[in-house]
Image 1 (tube, rainbow, N blue to C red):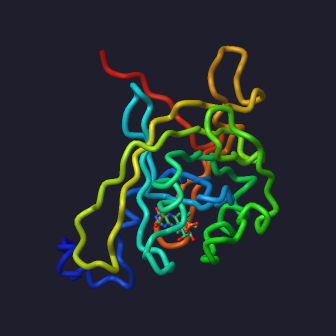
Image 2 (cartoon, rainbow, N blue to C red; image 1 turned 180 degrees about the vertical axis):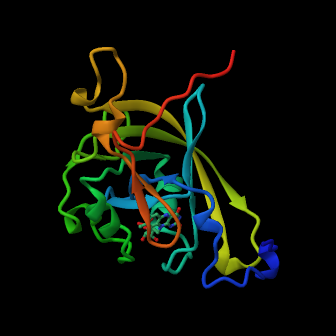
Length: 207
Ligand SMILES: Cc1cc2nc3c(=O)[nH]c(=O)nc-3n(C[C@H](O)[C@H](O)[C@H](O)COP(=O)(O)O)c2cc1C
């Protein structure tokens, strides 16, 4: 089959786009508002975009607040900081819970029964239950061209200025034990996948 997204002529039960770019890592983004109130939400339009400096992006759609912004975007643009917490098999339920649309001034960490701990370089706390945290300094927002205002996305770029890795996840050889970390990724619809010992395979690069 072939379809052109702007014509919406895929003829399928649901838009297939999110089922084709998979799995997507999940940036479980913590931020604070102007009064220091904590916010946490998952974003799967999320990825690393460069090494030096290590840089990440996530993309926020239209929020339900009167300014049309999701809380994460509003907070990060105001405070200049955020943390990406790694979502894993163990925290999958809490991750999902923090995607609920709640009023801007709701403390989502309390709601999901998670533990906020201090970061080293940014004021935004990180989630103790996550094994990896990327402390980020906001670089800029990029408006993604949109067919209509209601479908607008804004991409946030951040420089990773501090990285926490749970010590038990570092092997004697100095590698990351991803099989034990069990990160989860987003597929299409409400489906997810999990990286574990059965799903990892290696390949040498051609010389
Ligand atoms: C796994 C997962 C991935 C998500 N990815 C995105 C995303 O990439 N962009 C987005 O705007 N919303 C995404 N959402 C929905 C947001 O998490 C949800 O709108 C949340 O309430 C936003 O919170 P905030 O207003 O506190 O930032 C996702 C939800 C889930 C469960």
